[in-house]
Image (cartoon, rainbow, N blue to C red; front, top):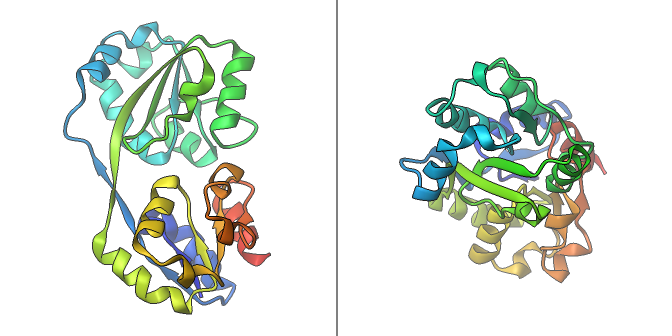
Length: 233
């Protein structure tokens, strides 16, 4: 059985593809996405000077859904002089629904975003992401500020479902460090020895325990097409 740990809405399209391939599949969403109820003083300060940034980077569809509302409280999108950047095609499509054309990196991850920023010589960058972000873009070396547009929370009931389902599982899809940390904290590593962990990046694969790295499959990206291809390996 293949288990996808992504939130139900985000997992739906890939789930259809897996089921159409007549593979045994279960979505156990161990996390959920919620809107933040407040911003920190630093975040508000950065938003007040939003016109000084050269580029706004959106790291997920959720960052678009919740982040655009925040941005529009401080500036009209039509009046914006800064550039827009999206981590991948799905995020870019979400921005396009707001009339925003965004640049895309060559690889759909933080490394790709940093390389694109470097090639464009951006010095002042505002990133919209979840409050659980690893803030990898801070490594870029220039002025990089974060706005946490939403929270990703652990779902205790679903974690229990996952624990009881692992003995039937052959492959498990893990999309983020936050989800991986939840799984490792709430399950016995021994119960995962025969599983193949499918992850969207080498960075996440390196965070797996040594006993799980050997069988891990790294997809080309977090795109449904790439994850589905990894499942078929």
